[in-house]
Image (cartoon, rainbow over all chains, first blue to last red; front, side):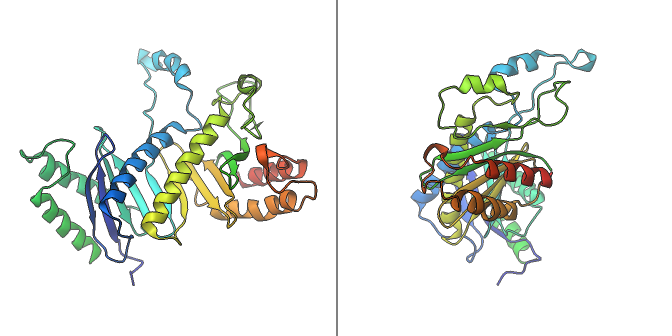
Length: 167
Length: 170
């Protein structure tokens, strides 16, 4: 079936900062189950909520009440120490697939589904994000927070992922 | 490898056992990692009391347990939807911690929070289920079938065995 040595990208999902699904595309027939559009929308919303919960669950983080004291404390050199920003779910592993989540500074989430054996998809993620900035954000007809319907993005993404999957 | 906390949820989605091994805050007299135990967090009668007697950074174990169950349950359903019914959610990782999940055939759910560098703890959770849960809780003649509110889970052998097992891993 699938060669274990090569990277297989199964699907890409993009969720906007409000938890709405704005892009969904699968690249591999044998990878993930096909769902109907409504299920994908529910899935995106659910993941958005879970992502917020996972950011709060950090066992080492002090409570927000205590944070005011740490935020104003000054470090060496009189610089203010800013507490580390909370980080939500980054990698999810299951028996059949692996999901990498990348959150941009503006809160857009990129979910890349790959083969479970694949360890490092940071580079692929980076490349997908580059394409998003180049062909979606620079498209004058694209409205923010709305579903991505950019022909150029579709084509470039398709050829890039096909190249990876056939390597 | 550092283990932060461990939770057991029964098939009624109730948290029947939880234990944390959180390091004490930069307390000079603290020394090593302090152990705090909070079993049956559904009994939230004295949450502040619990916080005052321990040096844990997080005060509300009960809320954490609920949040963890919510997250884990949603992710498990998501994984099964996408990966098929035979797929199983194994773990997730954030920049600060990693959560490991193991579900038995009887819908008992074991959850463990560790640091991010830890590899898969699936077999460890499986071992806890086989060697500790089945041996000391299921085979205990005095233990009820349903552990409502954590009844029958916190017995001496289980507590001791779990603590030794986890400390052996670190």
